[in-house]
Length: 386
Figure 1 (cartoon, helix red, strand yellow):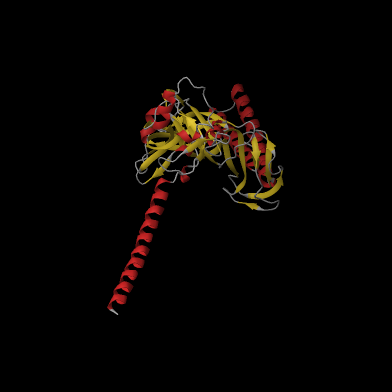
Figure 2 (tube, rainbow, N blue to C red):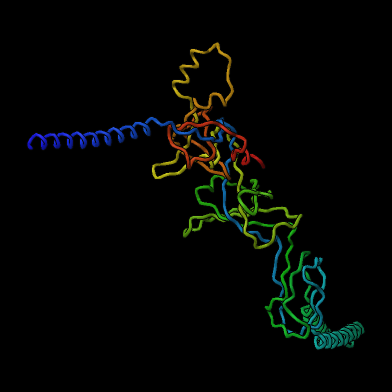
């Protein structure tokens, strides 16, 4: 009985030990398999680092306005008699736009002219009598003063009549009418807006640190977005005072708008062009990854073993890029960035001339991963296009 019990215990220990050993062996085998498993090669687009020309600039946000632009108003009140323009009509300087009722003012003008004629006749008669020696000098002076006063009244009445007429102060495009025939117009009420859009002015501000880089006549690029600077102009004004609250400087640029593409009040992107610099390393923004530890890029390098094999087989015929794709791995390199413009960024340190930098797909890459180059679709090429 004891012998059977001992045999059962021995068999139980063997079975349990076998199960435990098998599980340990399986776990180690799985661990070794994943540790030695080769990661699949990733297709990446690349760009070779080459120092080149850098066109720095000061970027800002501005607002466009017409070189000549006003809201048309009357200086005196009256009833609208005629509206002689249509919305978006191009008018010339001196054109009559709106006529107020001026019948009373014309009557006053006629009365003033009649008084002026009478005063002139009295003055001439006093001069004649004085020449004949029968008139007093005081009569001549009195009639002369009366004539001057009468002429002044005529000029005043004429000015009042003219104020009933709204005249275009300059050539341009007039907007939508804000008055109707028969409406009473009070002084200061806006009739319409008149804008000369052939030449535009752009107002923008820059930080005070950039003031030393700006000057009158400097080239300015302007566009609806930072990706499309369709207009070119020049700086015509720099405010001599820095805003103490914002520490910004107000700048004004002039832009030719003969195609009427810019509209007064439009939001625009502004870039002041600075002198060109050479031997600057520039990379597209798509190649740079920002993390909590800093900015980095992935470079494509050859394995050390591949370099050794290449040295031993120096006389062997060269193979194409596809045949040597397994020899390429990715290397994570932290970089120090400088100025930015558009879709490009200046690299101050981290990469050097001749390095092959990955330009897309970094979200699925890791340091040491195998890679093969495929530049059929490369974001860096698209960013080079104007």
